[in-house]
Length: 251
Length: 251
DNA sequence: CCTGTTTATCGTCAGGGAGACGACTATGAT
DNA sequence: ATCATAGTCGTCTCCCTGACGATAAACAGG
Image (tube, rainbow over all chains, first blue to last red; front, side):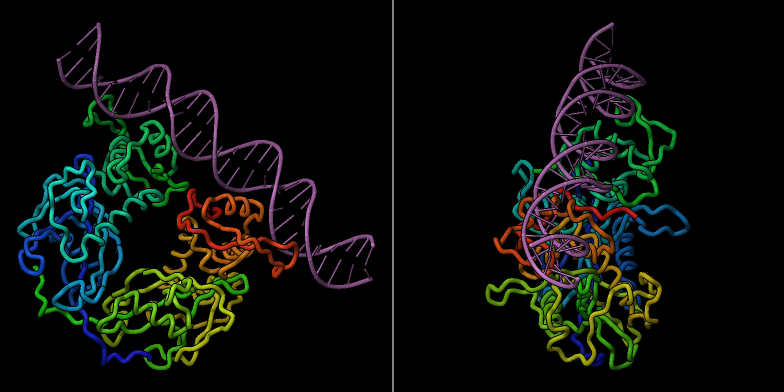
């Protein structure tokens, strides 16, 4: 039957955020501790209601700023501080025991923040290695601190977000969103290694990224902040698509 | 602020469907004519409200069956008749002039149906070449019948769905969803050609798809339904990912 | 029956990109 | 000075791809 706009089931619409960064050579996600039931005391993805006159992406950007101080929009021609994109929408009837909630999840890729969690109203916010958050803790060495699973269906949302990030850096220049404005080839390589959880050959990686037109633009400067021989500094080039892509090693 | 489940702005949640198929060597989408305002008389994507106790994917599958008779689920171990996946969610505040509607768009890839539009309650349903539907009609020869743009933001949804399909058949075996259960290499190639709008070399295409383990499984039969020399029949193999991918030709 | 047309399928060859890895360079630490 | 650490340039081989020749098996029409 066609639309009958006066008779529709009411839904609440929220945005949830999968905010990823690379810290200490590990892919980490932002989680907040819930202060009230349901799932009181459990960790959850940050999120909140979409306001009555607010676009979905605007709501996601607002929540991001509230939780981290990061801006995904350029306020006054400022460069974007983080990449934000829609991930997927989750609306199983019983995913929230209180009411029918449809959550539009968004994925944020952010550089490693100097201040862990500036601003924000949440009492407990932390970066957690994603491996330690997954249900069944497929953490690397099995020595994961036993951790309660994420609230709601956030385990699935986080998995989907991590998989999106892992696949998207294959064929786009999005990995630069994890880096500061200026970075070295080695720093970019360590981002790939952390996100994919593999080791990459520094020489082949260097050849690939510097040989792809538009991916990296040298700034002229160098740095030794990683130790060793000084490395060239680069900025992200205009190219967004990597062609041919850089595929993850098998197995 | 944390959840206050009693005070939330009310939303209507709908599913919209981008149903694609390949007919006569052209990528076509299913559109329905709107019988009431707003956008009365204009073509739109099929869709409808999500019911109070219904999952999003269930709602999409239900709408699909109502409009086309296709099933995306296996009722009794039956093979899936069409591929269904979530596409993206559209929720701009004024996208529907009557009220705040958030639409979870889904993408359906279906084989060419013998009966154009069986079943269903919509008075006017048709398959339209996607090029003829796009606003600004970037139709091939510019001789497109002047056509009113799709209702609501369905032009954008359709574009996103088509782009998803175009990119996804690069690295997955999803193109087989456009084919009948048994098909030839040539038929599969014509699917790629129609979706991408390019001509592919039959010999290289044959080598690629038959050389990718798990992509195609020969059934033993042959057919001459395309004329010419008899061609082997294949079924889709278990492999879902194509590695390495088959990239669209440049330009 | 022979010929042209159509579609399918196999083969060959050259070029590009990626993995494996050697070699050299430029820093700081001991 | 020596070592450890990173970065950068080369080389070699293999595999994949694009371009394209050649053959095979059907049908249509004379």
